[in-house]
Length: 118
Image (tube, rainbow, N blue to C red; front, side, top):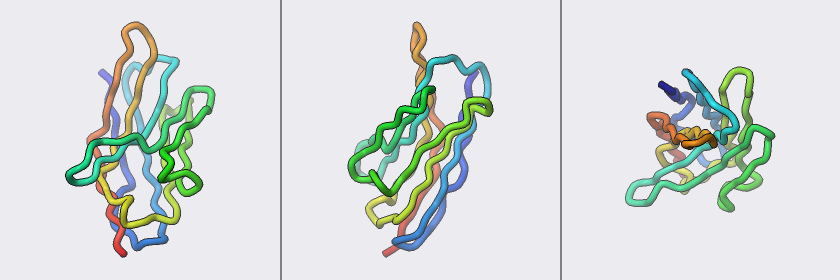
């Protein structure tokens, strides 16, 4: 059974930085995509960033040039470096692992709160 454990959320002032990390344990199949999603109160969960085995990345327009996703394939870990944080970045952040086999599998972390004060 695959488990994802997140760390690194917290409270920060606008303009500050936080780094989120996620570690996956269990049988991790490749290829896969590691990502981060977020959900603010009253809103739907949305993609923040994702990265493939090969290092290709996608970012939400709202975080481009501020957030950077990275991964360590050997350790099954990935991180989200968040700079220049804004109050609108406040949300619960979830790490996600999507394995692209047959069948594909989708795994989620427990969520970590990020609060950005103005």
